[in-house]
Image 1 (cartoon, rainbow, N blue to C red):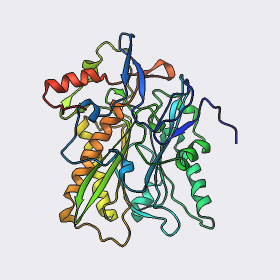
Image 2: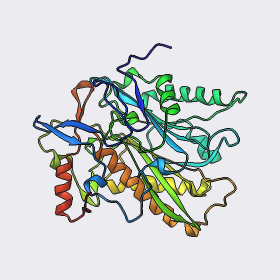
Image 3: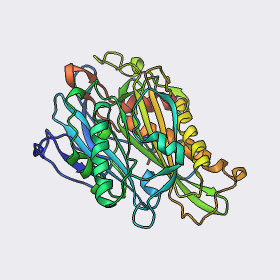
Image 4: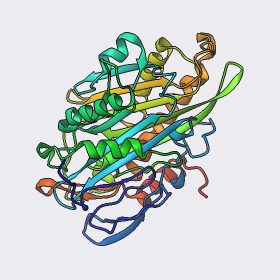
Length: 389
């Protein structure tokens, strides 16, 4: 294997860095970044999640980290490729640690809101209702190399097996990254999987979200969680998203159009594109019920202003880590889980935008960060903000 240049490769379960800066690692999802105002003047804008801005989605409590990693056993890893010029891409892996000797499948479902995309392995998940691999996200033209790398990982773990179903999804980051170079290698994929960990995952311009754009602004990876009553116990529902879709950014019902928030910006925006949503829960649910969760995850995109365009590949994958001897929740008691999914996905989508940094990429295309002060101003005027810490 050809060695990867050091400026191209970094990983962290909780941090992501542009490689024009010295590599370093922190267990902190709130990384200060320098962005640029539409007029070109420097402006320091700290990467902030929705709740840091006073944007609180729904009444349900979050998990400890307000992240998919609040679901026991779920770890997340990123590999980020950013040369400061034409490459802005990477890999994000959601790894259920429950998959291993003695238990090689988890109940799962896939929902395609609009099938203009590549989700390798989805038909078998749909047919048999099980997940048997980590979930890997990357850029569109790198899906197939990522799937081959994930296949190798599965083969190494299960010698003697003759059939595997790696699950790999994508969004098209070709607006900011030279997608035809297909820079993702086996090394990148394995780094994201094997070095994944718990705690608060990095968000924004990291991993598979390094080169994405959504709702008129720079976007990336976002995550959130909720704790909900599930029959006779509390359960956790977590979501992680790779945002790269069109529409008008909407927070708490208030439209925040890019043309109004950054009216003088020299910005470009790709048409359509996609969104990948991963939902994990420790609530005992069967594959049919998880399909219902996956549908609601895609529905939640409408809350943040998604256009659901012709060219947008909008997919959700939902799986349960509950022990197999637990009986599924009765359908009549599943509504709190549905509410948790809708709120967690909505907040994860907002986090994916609010934590991203202005990026200029291939062809000089620029996607601008959401200006936090303008968001606060607009939502305060509408009376929608909660008190900020």
